[in-house]
Amino acid sequence: MRIRRLLVANRGEIAARVVRTCARLGIESVLAASDADLDQLPARLADRVVRLGPAPAAQSYLDPAAVVRAAVAVGADAVHPGYGFLSENPALARACADAGVVFVGPDVATLLAVGDKLTARSHAVAAGLPVVPGGEAADLAGARAVAAEVGYPLLVKAVSGGGGRGMKLVRSAEELPATLDLATSEAAAAFGDPRVYLERYVASGRHVEVQVLGDGTSAVALGDRDCSVQRRYQKLFEEAPAPLLPAAVHAELAAAALALATHLGYRGLGTVELLYDRDRQAFYFLEMNARIQVEHPVTELVTGLDLVAEQLAVAEGLALRIRQEDVVLTGHAVECRINAEDWAHDFRPSPGRVDRVVLPVGDGIRVDTHVQGGSVVPPYYDSLLAKLVVHGTDRADALTRARAALELLRIDGVVTTAPLHRALLDDAEFAAGGVDTAFFERFLQARRPDLVEVP
Amino acid sequence: MDLTPDDVRDVLRALDSSGLDELHLELADLTLTVRRAGATGWTAEQHVLRRPVVERGDEPAVAAEPDRPRAAVPEGLVAVHPPLLGTFYRAPKPGAPPFVEAGDAVAEETVVGIVETMKMMTPVHAGVRGTVAEFRLRDGEFADTGAVLLLVDPAPGTAGPGGGPQ
Image 1: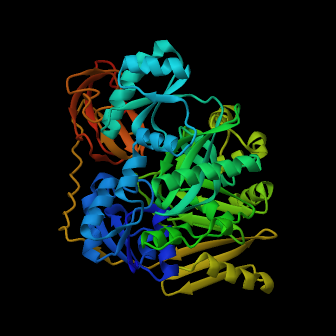
Image 2 (image 1 turned 90 degrees about the horizontal axis):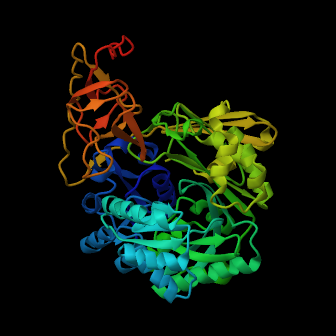
Image 3 (image 1 turned 90 degrees about the vertical axis):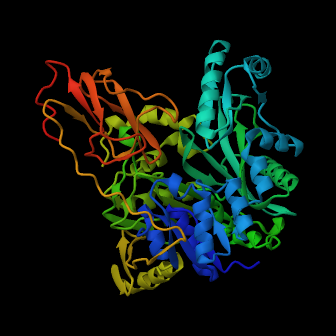
């Protein structure tokens, strides 16, 4: 069915991003906003705005009933859930189906299959993907048996966790009982599911992921990304393609992601996250994200595609418009996440009023944001303010342009992580490329930003 | 509607050849200032002025709770304020016992709660040695920076003038 009116059930930069594609495609956009967001930039950009609920996310962006109610009230054909919040929530997908509204995302069965990490892992194995050695730990005896196979150090992960939440490092056999107990009770509290599993801890791993798009029958791989610059599993900087990998590895990554998407009969936009072991030069399946990702613009810049438009097309039931041989990657793209956080004070959040926003513009520069002078950054949601995305002929060119663009970017009134990105871009190890996920903590230790005067 | 990035680039191309350094556009619901920055760079400062007309879902709107008058801090008690504005929690996680209850003894560094700001948790320390007199905010309530989370009855000899009226 043709989508003529789309409910955007999200906030922040991704809401503005989806609204922009709607405007380009002639789709009427209706933003479902909480009380904190009714007059923010995405609401000013959308064709219409409907109130979703009170500011706390649990009563608005995280309430499937409120989202469906808003969709029905405005007569939307489809709901775009963005990322985070309910984007991978089977209850929302089911409620949409019951109300006769298209959920812009995979079907309920796929969401269930990839949302549960153990099920996702078994699907990956069935599709022939390598997985990190490990297994379920139903109790301490089971955990000890798995640990004997994978060795220490190892990770305890919540089956229903994700995005780095619900992971704990166990260094030795002595730590296992206490950490297992803690992980189990935290998983029950945080995810409503106490199940955990154990996995070998890869000491020097890179976070590499492949963008896929499927129509339920066939799928295409749209290149890879590297998101290894992370703090506490939160990504800070991403790039496409993943640097310093042999062409054969890029091809293997794509083939693995395609195998999984095909095995799942995947319909929608998705990301297959992989761990690249630098020491062993091997990669393992980590998880699959059944939604658009924050870092999707780097893929858009190197492929020239509008991923939201493609996502809407497959949600309409159309067959893929892109053949694998048509996917051509041009140059290199990088993304700096500008967050309302003070990196000089342990990344303390900095909500408040934005006084002024001045953005770099020009060829190869894109800033996705939901703030302008006068915007309020509420304390209820995450701290992402803007994504500075820069396209260059190669990685060195992209980094040089990103440095210049960062010098021009100004977001006044709240403290931002823009100075952090300036320091990051000046770091020699980072500039060389291919850093592992442990890099950023080392970088922070060396920089000691609390001792550096930050303008 | 705002200008798309393509529109802005078109403006830049026109400007690049014009030799102008700055252009200020005022449209009905948008202002845009484009400035030359250095040899090759440009910046844009945009304001979308349109005020959205908010439609209601079919759920009746819940009237916002009126701000409760800020109760005065009784003589001799010390107010504990949040380090940042955010949602106040009295326990480390849902279902867990509270960090402290009224009547409990606390020291300066005792954690009496946490505030969640932008998905990040910051501990709230008592800041004074004494006994918890009462909680002024419930678990899960939003705390502005000036909010009184709880009151502490300071131990003798600790209630210096440092706290002062909040």
